[in-house]
Image (cartoon, rainbow, N blue to C red):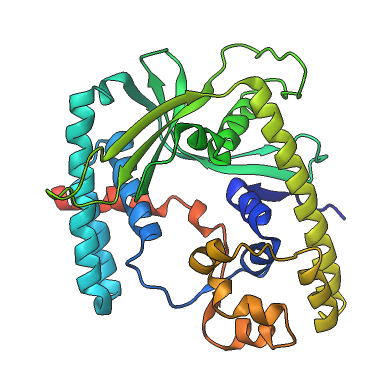
Length: 343
């Protein structure tokens, strides 16, 4: 019997690295909180990302994109109309201000988008074909300042990260590795010289950050950050080692969990695994605001409480595919709707 390879993204790897218990509930069992306000920082960031993807990748009016997205959200969640309209107004302010600032600083003049987002999978080196490294790669732009191709990403934040922290983000390094491997370049090996096989297509990124601020008289600039950077082969080799180790741990966890559930899913056996192999990583201040499990479920999983009943039967969580976001329905639907409006 042939076993199909398992696709693993940086999002899954980063979830595992931060907390294997949360990986267990979200990526293995597939549960997410059922009730969540559509007015939140993460969703605002996703909507602005969609608007900027439409503007830079397809020449769409970003304000019109936001109008379609927020109108649909209000129709789907009328009980949150007031909050969504406030988010809508803030998002428009942030996006319009970005184009003003980009024009003044000449940021757009230095970039030419040459590829739009695409889903790509490559064999993870060292996995023997058992793992596919997958990514929804951001737009690729040619940077006129150095002539190189870089991934273009959009983020929103209350404040700016230090530039060295931006470069530590594993997402861009994973994107660069996927592009490198998909193009047939040699696998980078830590501590060894590396030469590309032909032109190196993508060697870094450009992260554009929009601050979540209304730009009133009381607020203080800067409101936007434009940061281009490059990755060395040694840095990508080090990141590949991290991906290989994390993927090995994830596959081991999947194998042991699969065996436990295939044998009947005895609670004592699953509990042992979710407390050891899928152990929690408790960082109190971070957990309290970033992890939905901290609102009671994690405590039940560490005690004798009925965490399984709370997850499955309480109505507080819904089960689904954690990789559903990899579909292109968002931007394709927006393009179709705007084309229909234009007649």
